[in-house]
Image 1 (tube, rainbow, N blue to C red):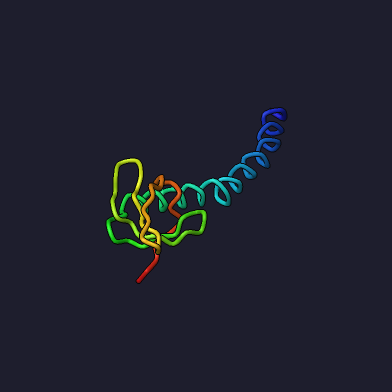
Image 2 (image 1 turned 135 degrees about the vertical axis):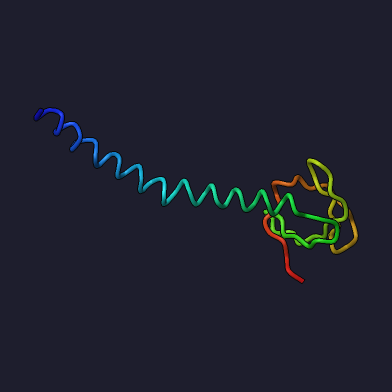
Length: 90
């Protein structure tokens, strides 16, 4: 019986460490990834966005795997959806 209690008391800190790791690192990353996925899925023509590279552009066309965006000088380029950082509010 003494070894059984010893095993539980030696595993308890490991379980506590995993729980702390989960709630401080894993769970917030999952929430952030879900929010980014929703943001990208809800993009529409006319939205002004900021890319991960810092470009401020306007969405002109939404495709399945990419966006066509317009620069301030009216040139257009394709942008992979994952590189959208945030949507600018008007």
